[in-house]
Image (tube, rainbow, N blue to C red; front, side, top):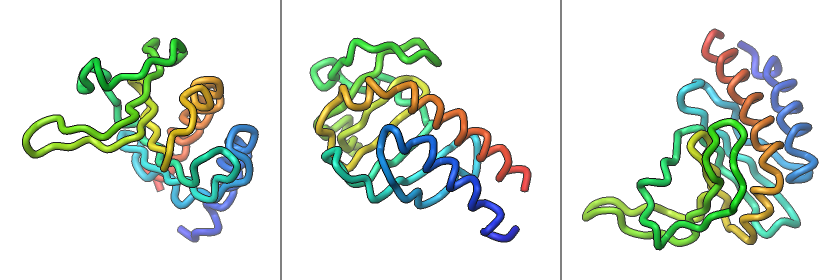
Length: 144
């Protein structure tokens, strides 16, 4: 398929996140609905420049209690609390998890920096709208 055929999807993604992140540049579209990976660049004025978007579940059970930061906000999709991992730490001998992450059981966001957990939790409705759109694009690309 011609890459210009996907331009409307890039444009719509920018339109959806504009009220939250401003003018941005999505680097890619998801290619598979079970492993959505999208990188958004050129974020300005929010204390971070890039945001990596995943739908791989981030189960809070893999983070020790002392490393969890709770938002007090419940995700309407998965009914779990939106949390953050603020500091990288070692999970096992060979595994280190990076930071920061903002996540629930259905979405995992990895901003280049995390100036405020509230910036993400207060805009979770836009996060969920974006997730729905990215899933639709992934299904369309998987069929292409």
